[in-house]
Amino acid sequence: MASSSSAHRGNLDASAAAEAGRQRSILAKLITLVDPANGERLAQALLDEFRSIAVIWSQSPEALDRVLGASSPVTVVILGAREAALESMAADLRGVAIVPISAELRRYLIASMGSLADETLRILFLDKACRLIADEQTAAREPEPALDPSENHFPARPGA
Image 1 (cartoon, rainbow, N blue to C red):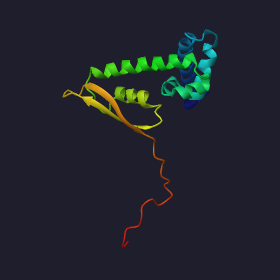
Image 2: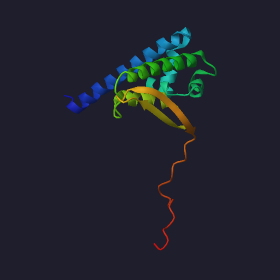
Image 3: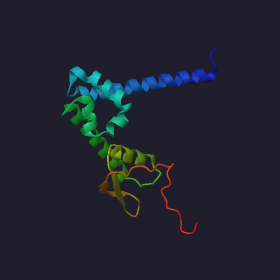
Image 4: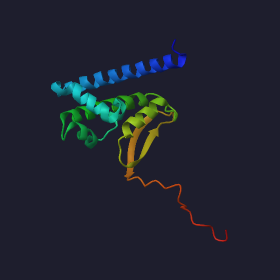
């Protein structure tokens, strides 16, 4: 008789497999619009590289082209679908009060900024009722290298 933890693990594995199948199917349908002969193969290649549609959505055109080939029409379709999804998410945010811990806001920001190679200052302008009235990216710069925590980056204080 299987233990409850192994049965639970089996349910999680089945659920993950079902989710992967759903994502592959959705992505293949999208790709088939511009490359009917290779929809399944390219969907699987993208998922093998990036692991999920959410991560694929956050990729730059160059990252997608590394998997799909230079100037692939599939890249154009994926970027267009992402743009439509982001606009839909932004439209949903415009009609409601913005709460900083909102899951919808977090998903929108991750989806819209996940592939940016540069650090970006983004300003969300809200009205008095905390509804979104503008969303602007105002500055970008290359990220600073991370500090090595094993090194002392602070000079000793005089007299210490």
